[in-house]
Image (cartoon, rainbow, N blue to C red; front, top):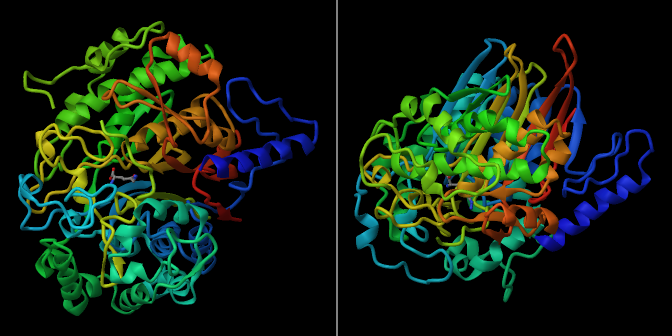
Length: 597
Ligand code: DON
């Protein structure tokens, strides 16, 4: 990853060298990348009418193709999701699930769609305590991570259908077309996919479908290798013909369930037939004169963002205009409280109410802001505010390959912010009917206090139960100005680092006034309260001097490959509020490219 980013940024800085002198700025000493006006890195673009930002060039192209065919942001998002499931099976697909936040410009209405996976009817709170270790071993191979037991009931096909039915203009056949083309004609394996496959090749080769993806003797998928997905193409044709019903009922559903059980799972055809999406009320927070809208439970992302924003607004006099270290310090401190809240209270709201109103009370934010010191990093427990007297609620987080975020803005101003996932890279690392199956069950607490793959201790509220949805970090987010006009769409992949990275990029772009490529390219930090460490990226390193300043404030610094992968679109408006430009960016950390016109 480091090796790949270096030339990317190098190339960008080269553009800088040849940029016209007007507007060109020297690279700031704080590690941000200077973006000269008139030159853009290849992963960012300026459009005027519609914009797509995904983490794979072919997915952005699929969305652009569907927009050109008269589709709305929902149709284009659906096409991108379907394409992603083909070209990057490490991240997302029909065997996974996710969240979508949609802005209907005509009706001036927001909608939040939960198409997260849910536990099968035979799930139980102690199912992972009792479960034997799956055969094969290797990395990320607990029973909630590898094999059939790790899979929740997929929500992706139902989610796509719900988006199409409520906000789409086109039919399944049209939105499936690009994905079907990629699956049948083949596509070139990206550097990202090749890298993601390396640690898991042996596990993947145990699966009869994935085994065929590897050239004989290859230890990973090869960059540039042409991959065809005929088994998945058959599933896509069913969707094109009859829609999601063909996935959740009938012969395909029976085949899916049988394959999951063969891989050691408990999914039955009835679980598929019973799956339903949920429309929920998103979380809203006013801060810095803007209206921030993000994901409600079962995601913990929205309330993490909302609490951190409240605290940051209150501590702003101590960090605004005070330089990069002051900002990063205040940012890290603002995250510690909400991550403790998450460990204790986050749950599927249909299984156990999440006390959102109380969690986000301004009084709690005020207490946390009053605790904050611009001079010292405090232990997370100093920001702990249990709602009532009750018992309180690691491992090295994994590479953020198992998720994908995308933004689409169409010419009518509708916006789709979608984050979709199979959880860990290649999900549970087996296929059912050619579909890579999720290991979303690992987002449950496998036992109270047990750390999940992202080093988050599981709270008792998030134990598995029949039909329950595991707590997520996914945070598709939209930001509006005080007049209600849309300013930005963003979201990320990267497990527990998702809300942190999303908020970091949005704060840079909307509060600190950095151009989107600069906000996206800047080195990121991550803090989640537990363990007491400030993570800094190896792929985009924070300059040593800044790290030293943060250390001097008391932060324990530990490197991590990358702090999530963010896709974003920022709308530039003129004085009366008309859109002057759409700035779209695909995080350089993953190799995506935006599309639009
Ligand atoms: O829903 C969640 O929060 C996780 N399943 C997301 C996982 C993810 O971003 C993949 N990263 N390794």
